[in-house]
Length: 125
Image 1 (tube, rainbow, N blue to C red):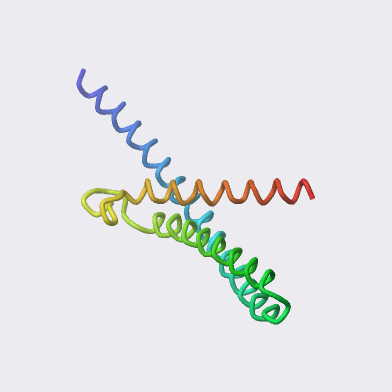
Image 2: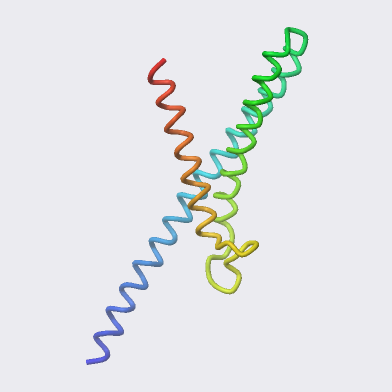
């Protein structure tokens, strides 16, 4: 009778393992794309801040604020990317007391929310 319980436990563990692999793959892709976009937009925003420096403080300030937002989103993507590459099993599953899966989920959710806002903004315009 106990042999049947072990089989069910093994099937559940196997399913959980595949869910973890899928979660890591999603975080890897989302974090990698967000980091790539963050670098691309960061370089262009920095260049525009330097180019428009003589056109008035308003343009420079808006470029700097957009650059700060870009850096924040880059960090969120970097957390998702690093979370997918770090071990999720104890005792090495923490960074400064926070678990890697939780950090990755927060970074991925923030990244996905920013993509939804950008898509909605593009759709409205």
